[in-house]
Image (cartoon, rainbow, N blue to C red; front, side):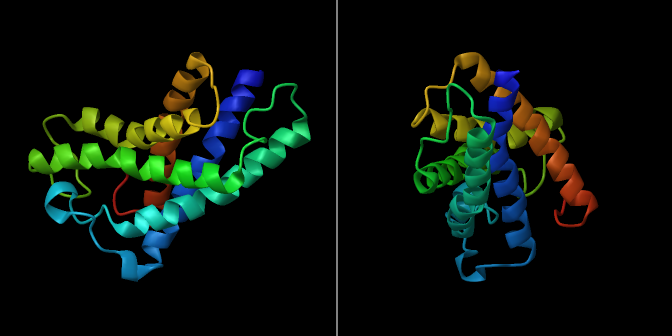
Length: 179
């Protein structure tokens, strides 16, 4: 039961951050930073705005997760002893950095931005959802000694949650495509 609660706590900043990021993209917030990091290597969708918005967007989720952890008064706190600002920055940057290798590979394979490969469609759909969860787990590990099993379960559940949120945001017309 505690492990499931930890998975929820670890996922919450990413869920909130991802949703707030998509709203920022849709509303064209901080449009000045909507400049590709490197268009040829990563495409036009990987912009400096993401690296600014994601650390800010994960902050409310980290704060909420820390408050919930303190509210439930677990014997072994997971994230409540960590700096909210540093953890938010690390998660936001981990989220963004982990997406770059996938974008790089897709550009080398000639796959257009925001698209998936017809040839390896489900592989790329999975990687598109899992990469940020993996990046955030790496960021968490810089601060927290998370058990390996909890890390794997958080990556799996985070990937599934990411997919469900993306489909929901697509149905709400906030995202351009469901994957």
